[in-house]
Image (cartoon, rainbow, N blue to C red; front, side, top):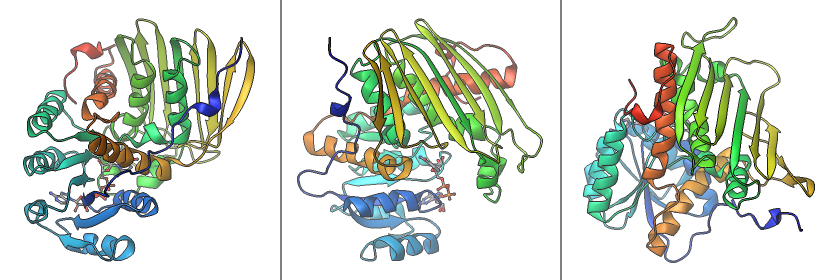
Length: 356
Ligand SMILES: NC(=O)c1ccc[n+]([C@@H]2O[C@H](COP(=O)([O-])OP(=O)(O)OC[C@H]3O[C@@H](n4cnc5c(N)ncnc54)[C@H](O)[C@@H]3O)[C@@H](O)[C@H]2O)c1
């Protein structure tokens, strides 16, 4: 018996094929810099930037795409027929309405995460996209972060068989990173919702064929943290075929670490690096252990990968792997964890519809 062909696993962003599509970025705040860095490196055709704070869009335009046009009125931008894809990088509170307007104008949409605060609203947006004949994808860039991208490719290829457990731990100084941000530093569910959604999404992806049954979560504040909202969380998710755990330590000021261990019937995949990933993973099966070098970073591959997937789907007339519907199972686990952390009780994710 030969070992798994790990070198054949493809988790890189797809190259753009066919005529280059016009892209606009809406919401040019903090994270838009990472979008635009990746889009410039990929050679994407960013034609316009929109923010109701014009100075922010102008600054991004000047830094990344000097030829692009700046708008403060989304409808003016949407009237352009040379723009096919709208990348909406605002916070979730205002985003669904911007998604609706973009779809109504006949655009394909890439939404930042977390996709929605209510699964019914997510379903409604997905239906709106279907009715408009346009694609709606979510920027779950974690799926293209190399350590997670490799993991998902390996699991989907059957490298470790059916997954039986998935354990993730992250130790990082998130409190210091968001200390001066007026939104994040006060977000009650900062760790489980805004940050944790990437991990809930990866858990949902590795347990794609399993039925989630129960989620238990606790959050807390710890000595030494520099923001007032909880920075730590511990989560246990039970599926019909196994368990997942998530350990978030978001006020960890030394020795930043991110790691996972995913077990299956036929092997184990392990990784240790920084909070957003490292440079190698290890696959252990009956044939032995193989070290795999990882290419790229959370930001470069992540922000490129999500847009690349949408562009390829538009060109090919297919459904992208980050279609909005695929983000709902992770959101369901996330909402259940938040509800459990508020009530102190286990929550069946199948009964949860929204962030309560
Ligand atoms: N995928 C990731 O790794 C990642 C990382 C960081 C942030 N994010 C997500 O990105 C989103 C934005 O975060 P941020 O830190 O950039 O926030 P931000 O507040 O810095 O930027 C949001 C921008 O949206 C603009 N805006 C708000 N309403 C608008 C409207 N109606 N029309 C046009 N512009 C509007 C604001 O003026 C602001 O410039 C959040 O959902 C956050 O969770 C994702």
